[in-house]
Length: 167
Image: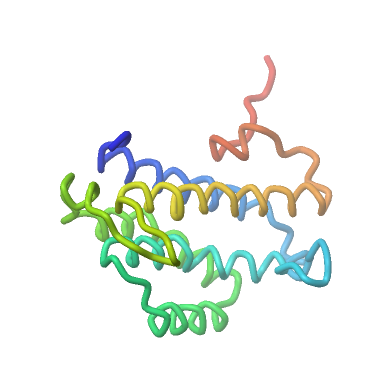
């Protein structure tokens, strides 16, 4: 494993931090913004992000994707307002730690098959969950930029903080 379990949990928790930072930059009057008719709105994207990471982590840990569990989580997400969605995302740091607490190094090296392909559990966690979090938070960042947040930059996207003010 390239990452230790602690490093993986830390990386996922950092993604949660960045996502909450970016979400704090959303103008609530623009929650319905969508770049094109076929894309998620900002609110729909946040609702998806409120379930994606934990649901995929759970699937990787269990070695199987349970569509009924995922569907129920999706329905619960649809019922949440903006504040409820952010509150749910705020639980992700603890959720990742709890979901991965009992996963051993051997478990991370074990092969699982999901979505038509096989790989180690650790590689699936990195390629599906960690990379997915980074990709979708980048999408949120692009939405923010499209909605006029020209003040946002690299520090916001990669560190989850505003750029330091020049002296």
